[in-house]
Amino acid sequence: MSSGSSAAADLARYLSFDDARRIARRKLPRGLFDYIDRGVGEEATLRALRDRLDAARIVPRILNGQQTSATTCHLFGRDYAAPFIVAPTAMAGLVHRDGEFGLARAAGAAGIPFSLSTQSISAVDEVARAAPDTDIWMQLYLWQDMSFSEGLLKRASDAGSHVLVMTVDTPAGSRKEWNIRSGFDMPFRICARSVADLALRPNWLLSVVAPLMLRGGLPEMRNFPEGLRPRLIGRPVDPGLRLIADLNWQHVDWVRERWPGKLVLKGILSVQDAEKAVSAGADGIVVSSHGARNFDASPAPIDALPEIAAQIGNRLTVLADSGIKRGLDAFRYTTRGASAVMLGRLPLWALAAGGEAMVRSAFDALQHEYAEARSYTALS
Image 1 (cartoon, rainbow, N blue to C red):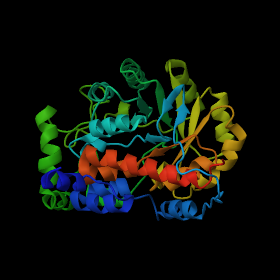
Image 2: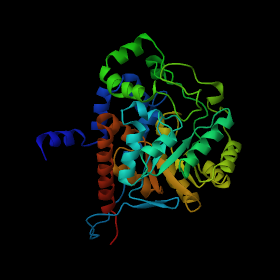
Image 3: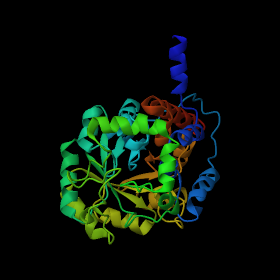
Image 4: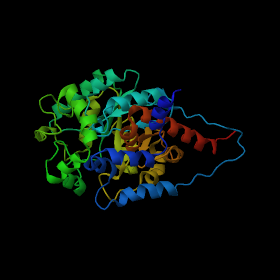
């Protein structure tokens, strides 16, 4: 390998979550970085995610005669190389020019599923064409005009998605003062701070926004109905495309009746709601606090998971997310009853830091760490 190739490989090498996050912070506009990085309110729940994961101990089993440990898992009728799923994250296409395409291709290379957000910059059929070897799941935020949501369900099914991840813990957008100050949203709010923010990151404008504009104009949420898509700069969100504020179990029934594939409810933190998910015909749930981004008094999912998994784990598939920085964190979740975990901020920081190549490196590192953790408890 030439010295130039070696240098390029080093630049794309993922070392840790914190390392990738530091690089991302230097590259991204502050408003976009904060949108991904921060929580809500006083961020007590965000701090608790790390504290509770660190407190989750696992007793090693020694002399088991194993050097490595398998990482494969089986979810919704399909086999995967590791118990990881790329979580649906809004506007990932603004993080790097590779965008959702790069995340999806990296997931396919790692043998894991990729969940596309309703609020993505690339549409589900576009991602399916760009990453034909990837198992693409579709995330759903239910819109006020449910005929629009019905159209999205058909679009996702036609694109080959067999798993729908319905987010149920977001009846309305959470008020975040750092987003208000920065002006970061769709559409982007022009103010002194937002203009200064962009002026300090000209490389982001040239390397991310400019290629998107050359491909198809201003960045927009392409899963939204044509003609009504929120853009980086432009019209406000149409009232029919706002989130349903009175989201309830009847809405889950409505989705269940119309979605032909597997249905996963994301944002469960109580046994009572997990039981209702079973009754509603869900095939799985995600025990999640939405990365501590919505409600600042939520319990840490690692604490809520064991009771939920014990109660309903034999009746549907239990997944988990929030706060995962290493393979050991993923293992903490699986030892407490999760069949697999969703990864949100981690692949976004890798994408921002080094594009698709670094996301692939991140998944390799995570799988290695997960196997390493398992080797300490595997029985001979």
